[in-house]
Every structure is written in structure tokens, then in C-alpha cells.
Length: 279
Image 1 (cartoon, rainbow, N blue to C red):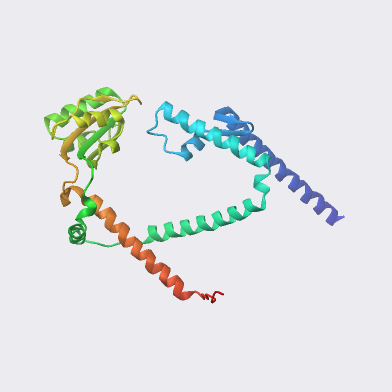
Image 2: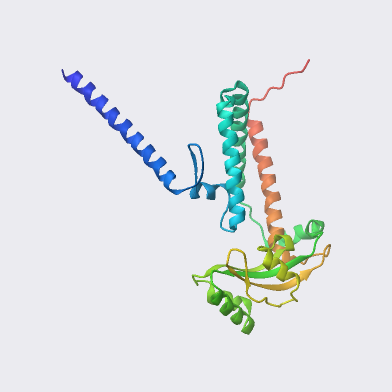
């Protein structure tokens, strides 16, 4: 009798657990149905899932629509592939397993790179720069700029006034905790194609050295101020002081590559590896 009661209780617990799973699944589905941006049959795209596909903070409405349309195309094709039995195909499983291995390797490599601590001094960077000057010659004009973006026009105007009256860094310090600030950056070296948004890029083209632009409204209805510090013509040797951050990035990347090579050699030496003679 006791065993029978235990069995009934066990079954009741399982039914309760199953009911909770179904309830949570339905709630999740209902939540998606209320807040989705797009759907294809029973598949929903939410704001959170859209943000996971790409950084949407700097995208305008047209670019977001393109991203959503791409998701729809992919979802339509995926659902058709499932209907055609592609995912049940033996070849699909082989490709999936191979991709699984490659993903694991890629994640291990990323882990090794992230954990590698590279110690260096400024003198190391300067020595690297002197030996590899050709790496730091740009085939296009590059612009050393300061750039700021704000949510409202009035704050952007006030920022510009202080930057004109004193300098960019003092204005940056004064406004760094202002809620209207999207970002305030100093000393960025970029080509025109790397300067965003397009309205700011167009303004930089016509600024004189040290000149600060007027407040520029962009398509996202945000307000930009940009200062051209200096322009460097294409193929001109860039001074170390200007590109020290770029030199540092390349130096660290090369050192991490060497670190990974040593890591791989160590794995190789510790593994039992046999290569049979080929016939």
C-alpha cells in the first residue's frame, strides 16, 4: 500500500512538473506573440533577439528594416529546409558535427588569446614601430578627430560653446556625467569612411585643423559636434605619438599569436601522435 502511494505521489509530481513546463512554454510564447517585431508562421522575432543579431544602437529605421527582412528570408528558408527533411539528412549530421568541432576549436583559441597576458613598455612599442614603419602608412587620407554626440540639441550647443571658449578636454570633463551624452571621444584617427554618421564625415572633409564644427543633426535625430585636430595625407609616415594605440594593438596581436603557437607546440609534444606511412 505504501509503495502504491509513493507511486501515485511520484506520478502526481511528474504531472505537476509537466504542467509547469507547458505553462512556462505557453507564457513565453504568449509573451513573444505580444511583443514580436516580425513572425514567420510559428517563429517570432523579438526586440531582444534582433539586438542579438547586431548592434542596433547606431542603426536607423531603414537599416533595422533590412535586418528584419534578412531574418525573415533566413527563417522562411530554414523552415522550408526542415519541411524538406534536410535536417534529418545524414550529410547534414556530418556537416553539423564538423561545425561543432570547428566551433569548439575557435572558442578554445579565443580563450587562450583572452587569457594571454602580454607585458610591455613604451620603449617596446617604439622599437616595434621603428622596425615596422610600413605597417603604419595609410593608403588614404586620415583624420585625427574629436567627436561628441548628444540626445538633445541644447546640450550639444552648450558643449560646443565651452569647447570654443576653453578647449575640447575641458568641455569633455564638464559634460561627461550629463544624461544627454551618448559619447564624447578624443584623439581618434580615422579615414572618412570610418567616421560615422555620414553627416559628420561630410563635415570633417571641409574643416580646418583645430576647427570645431557647428552642431550637426543626424538621421537618428541625435546631435553631433566634431573637431578636426589634424589631417594626414595618404602615404605619409604617421608619428608614433599619434598612432601609439594602433601600434599597441598590432604589437599585442603579434605577441598573442606567438603565445598561441607555443601553446600549440606544447599540446603537440604532450599528445601521442602517430602518422602512418602512406601507400
